[in-house]
Image (cartoon, rainbow, N blue to C red; front, side, top):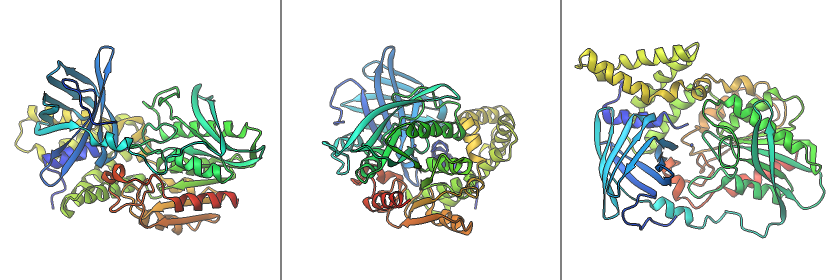
Amino acid sequence: MEQHLDKKSSLLCLIAVLFFTAASIGYSQTIEGTWEGELDLGLQKLPLVFNFETATDGWKGSLDSPQQNAFGIPLTSILFDGTLISLQIASLGADFEGTLINNTLVGQFKQSGLSLSLTLTPSKIKEAKLEKRPQTPVGPFPYEIINTSFVQKKENLLFKGTVTKPRGEGPFPSVVLISGSGPQDRNSEIFGHYPFWVIADHLTRQGIVVLRYDDRGVAESEGTMEGATTMDFTKDAWAAVEKLQSFSFVDKAKVGVIGHSEGGLIAWMMGAENSGNLSFISALAPPVISIDSLMGEQTYDLVKASGAAEELARAQEAYNFKLYQRIKTSQNVEEAHKNLKAFLESDPEWMGLDSLQKATQVDKRLKQFAALTAPWFYQFIKTEPREYISRIIVPTWVAFGGKDKQVNASSNKKSLLHMGMENMEVKVYDKLNHLFQTAETGAVSEYSNLSETFNPSVLDDMATWINSQ
């Protein structure tokens, strides 16, 4: 079987490597709002969502690829004259040109010399966001809500967040919520769901103080995600713990963290370097196996869940894994860039091109894969979670979703149990996805269609475990 991808499947791959997170528009001759469409890749269709808003100098916006869990990809240039639209997506080396006809954008999506028809219509996803999510907390609340702030002193960054506190003087057990990959606000909002708010609401009703905060550069928090790594996000989380411990109503002997996905990795790191500041940790869908292996599995599971054939899923898994290995084995970012270039130059896709054409195409592809040599990914792909897990001695509660296509429950649980860690409880919820929603297949494309925000059984089990510490 060929290990390289054809042009259509390579488009899917390019978006996949970036994985790491209102009423229907009825206005005429404006693009403001959210628009959606599908790219026909032959073996499958790839949904794309464009978000446009006005800016002082014209327009700004972002691209979401929900099926690949890639959100907020910036649109670097948007020109719109009331009828014609032209936009560029520098991080993907892609562009879209179209015409607004009867509230429909009709045009061509171009990338790597490939041009595909793309029709965008006002998004139904935005309508779904306005639908009532049954678990979204609604007041009056039987607890106190405190807006707070804290400073991450090593970089002098100001963070804003919210504390939910049970009524009374306490002291109460408490936790900090740590988000997964990508920019997240304090509620970890996605498709009109507010999972961190739902978690905070449930735990606080069970007598637990919860601090949740906007990630650096998101909403009210200072700083930027650009150039930051998981190690930097760990510093942010420690600053949040320090703030939590400063409250008089917090039981200093019962302070912990709950991390989801990459936040689970951060919880591992904090548990490993813990010097008595944490009494317990909880990890939701955390990586346990090596990150390059995890992302290889993730590629296969996501592509297979999208309806692609086994052969394509395995080919793309193999291609991406080789790509990750070139980065992981590099000694520094400069070497990673050279190794990436060599890997792309060896791709059989360029057969038949002259040297100039090949060089041009490789250069375009290098720009498209720039995220792989950015500080976050370079550090992330080298991470070995088990090195941190092995040093954790505080009580730990771990949960996986049996239908999770982003962090495979089977392989990660097996690896964790093989370590034989004491004081660690591991649970798998068979019917749940990566967001801990009850799911049919676990595919990312389901997230927005599910009314459940966070499974009540997991909430109950987590609250019971924390209160038992």
